[in-house]
Length: 139
Image (cartoon, rainbow, N blue to C red; front, top):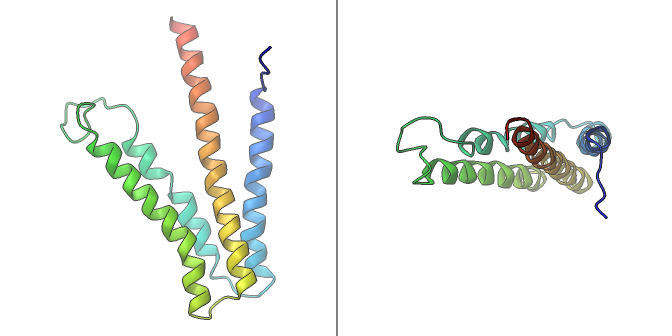
């Protein structure tokens, strides 16, 4: 027996998960009256963008983005990895420079990872269901 979760349940649970990440990062700023960890939100929101741009299907005839070579997809993975690593290490650098405290650093890193993972899970859940719906409509 297969258990199906409705799309509304997925959206509600992922939005709660995303709100938890934003709450942790904003609390890491507000509790300690230091707003440097807000840069972490920007980095983690920008992290999935290169995969979305370079990881999609290739519609052009360019060798850079063609299916025969994975240069575009590899470039997208590289930039996404760079953003995620920067998002994790940015609070550590702020802590090392004594701009934020250790608790603020931990809250910012955990909140940023929750934000990034909820964006990735959202795209993973709904990209696969959209592909299945297109197959059912036109197949």
